[in-house]
Length: 256
Image (cartoon, rainbow, N blue to C red; front, side):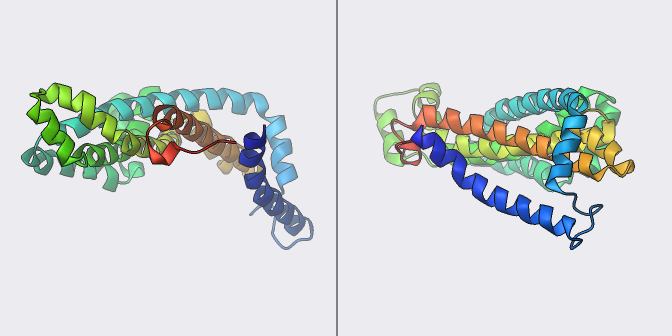
């Protein structure tokens, strides 16, 4: 329980301070409520619209998880392909960079044309946004394998397949986990952006609430979307701890 206390209490302190300041600032007129609503108003709005928000959350969570899973699988496979040789990297890595540099809001309408006004376009948006960190970090991990260990595997006649799965991928796990942490949050962002175009989910709810000038509702939905990203991030952190705690320095710590 002590480790849980240490995990929860420190982040709560600045949250309480900031929320208290917002409440006071709006109440005394320092900040207009249409710019920044009071936290109590946001909580009340969340309670009034709980059913609508919960339904939208299910849609967004489903698209985010599927998009994140696709980016994990496709990004890892693409990184393995890029690690096969320098010429492969030079030929194909620029296309991975392309997905990172093109603003998703610019290609979201194209995704709607290609996939339609449904969850498929939203999943595609989440995948496009979140795939690059997986590719970049996995590739870095695969290329940073200790040369001495690679020579040792060669000395014992290990095949490329065996070297990949018994040495290079395990060695790349810390980098892969870093990429997944980043991709988890980006998948939610990509989903929200896709929903701005297609409607539905938390993104569509934010857009409709904005048009109706329901600022408290906008902030309430934003908080729920942030919570979804935090949950995905926490799940990757837990997975990283389970996989690396026995052998890698980044997770060799006593949670108590």
